[in-house]
Image (tube, rainbow, N blue to C red; front, side):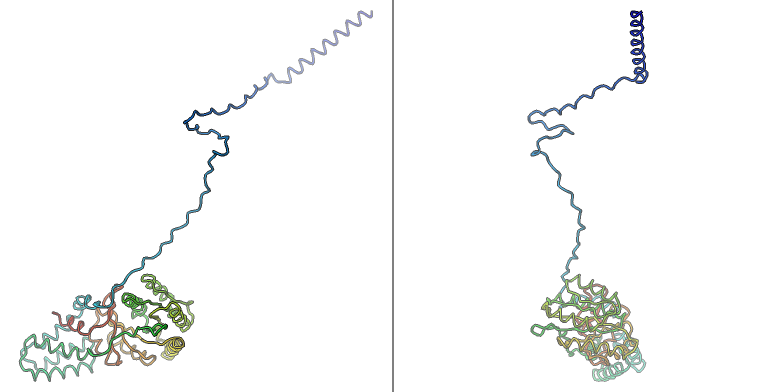
Length: 392
């Protein structure tokens, strides 16, 4: 009996072992175990003289090359090229042909009339009309015609050459060949000369200021510009451009600021920088004469606390003719004008305006603008001007 029970126990144990094996077999889902991962192979060692292959890892830290950090590319600063203007000497001679083309009608018209065999009253009326049309003005025209009539009677018969000589002498007399047209721009020891530029907006005042700086720098002077026309932002920007082109320092203030303060700072800067000349561009508003007088008077008084105002240049547009004379008279009442800069004389302007403006104001034309170019401002030379009118 005991032997029988022992056999049954052995059978039960074998059955349990078989059942456990089957359970493990079905739980694995029939999946096989993943293959063992092989360790990575070491990179091949290059032979002597052979460059390592791409992707090879250099184990020697001493031979490892670390690329430098990249730096941001800074934008290139473009410095404007400083121009060297030509000297003032001979400028008007170089521009004579341009002047002759625009003013030949006046000279040739007068020469044709004076060269006639017989000069009757009608001819003299034509001469007078020609002069008035050329903006000479009524007063100077009558004086000129009277003098010409007297000299023609004394001379008697006239050749074309004699008529030309006669007219040339009379034009030079009326223009004032003996007037002092020197620009007072010599420094006073350690203090620079000061030029105050005045005129109505639109006459070329700021442009004339910039061109005058070129004239003086071409003659070897060191120039500081003062942008005291603070009521027009474009005026300060325009003057800055002129200054940058020739290396002249520009002193400017806030838009709508005090013009006298800017003028004072410009003179102070000129003294500090040991400049030869300070040129101050002023506002040109003509809303009320009282306001203009107060403003320009204040600018001049403030400047004179540090330096002397050597020149007060009035800029006139020659194309406005006799209309510009009224503007000139207003400014003459405000400040003591020492000279006139006549712009746009190469266009539709009449050359006679030089005679009339000098006669009315009693001050000489010192500068003339004969074109739109940067170097078309020239010291006025009466003989060159008259010869251009009459032609060769």
